[in-house]
Amino acid sequence: MIDISLQQDQYEVVPTLVQPTLVEVLKSRVKAEMTREAQLPEVHTESIDQMLRAHLASFNPESEDAEAENAFYVADLGEVYRQHLRWKALLPRIEPFFAMKCNPDPMVMRLLASLGAGFDCASKNEIQSVLEMGVDPTRIIYANPCKQNSFVKYAYANNVRMMTFDNAEELHKIKRFHPTAQLVLRILTDDSKSLCKLGLKFGAPLDTTAFLLRTAQELGLDVIGVSFHVGSGCFDANAFGEAVIRARRVFDQAKDYGFDFKFLDVGGGFPSAHITEGITFEKVATILGSTVDALFGPDVRVIAEPGRYYVGSAFTLATQVIARRTILRNETEALVAAQSEHPAHMYYINDGMYGSFNCIMFDHQACEPKVLLKDGGYTYQQRLTSEPHGWASVWGPTCDSIDCVSPKSSLPLMETGDWLYFDNMGAYTITAASQFNGFRRSEILYTTTEPEVSLHF
Ligand SMILES: Cc1ncc(COP(=O)(O)O)c(C=O)c1O
Image 1 (cartoon, rainbow, N blue to C red):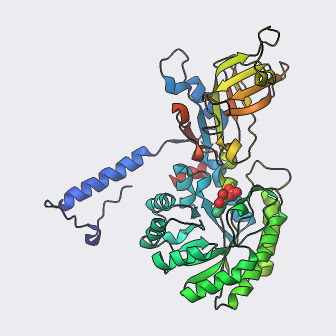
Image 2: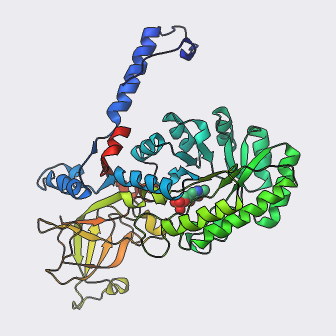
Image 3: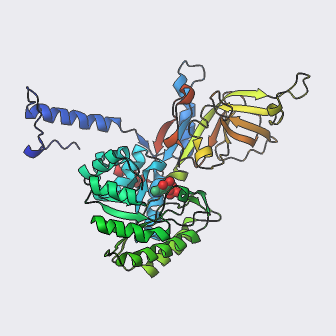
């Protein structure tokens, strides 16, 4: 439904010679709203399997349409929805604020907004896109301890009050540009059991928190609580419990400086749904939930900033084998030393390290290719028993030799035009993809394996 009601006070007075009439303003609002609705991609209700098949079936290899053979994602919004329900069931006290840096996909964002989640934003643009969805500023935490002046001003102008800090210089900046901010002191925790050690860059050591609290007190700033991040890709659930204990110490210390903390932000680092061994969300929830309850009364509001937890397993990437090189080892021609190390076949696919697979470099991921379409046969989630597998390396499409997706994978002999797929590609993939060498970001097709999700669009 398009709401065309317009209050007089919403009718902005434009300082031009010719003022638009009310009807013109209404018309342009309806147009903008219709465009916005028209731009929403379709959300299908098929399985991932059916989505992949349908897209590949619609593709004619003889056609001139280069777009059709591009790599593409299938995003299952039902998986995001299930993760939300799981969170609510296992950590009912802790409010999730989705760390949108992980994957600011507009459909994921809309779904989470309509489910009532909050958002962890790192920049002005992120804040702006959340506000544009109609999310109340109180559902945003600006969780970047080192912020650009103009971004702080933007937060002030738009009533986004919660923001983190971990140094005194930031307090002076905030005093100047956002004196009514609700500040959250980000403390350093042990992130040695994590793939991405965020403590290298952020977090106040506990021997500095007294100084920071005193500075905030002297500046007359409102510090409401503590945040931490155990590191992204955390593989030890105990890290969460230990971090909560450290936060408690700072809560107690804050009283000496006149603060009565009522806010705890337990950060991100929660595992994606496909992690079923070692650290699991169930293990984290058991340790985190019980430690929070033991150390913080019900008057303390607790939030978290999960990123990969929500989206990691929700995106599947399909890529075409665009070229194959077979290494001829017996030839007398001297092989380049580096090539002598290669497995027998080198496959080149149409997404790579400069695109979705930047997660290999930035997020320390290992991405495993699986066969999707070979010799016209469709093999999603099938074990290939018919043919012995050999070793192959898989490469992205750019001209850079760093663009290697997998140096050694067990694959059957693939031909140009066959397809590979990669599961669990939702976190820290497309968000940081570049267009290096002129390659476009892979398109996303949406489906939901949970019918309820359709009600949210
Ligand atoms: C401040 C902050 N919060 C939350 C997250 C999300 O972490 P994860 O995806 O591991 O949950 C990050 C990731 O870098 C972060 O920097």
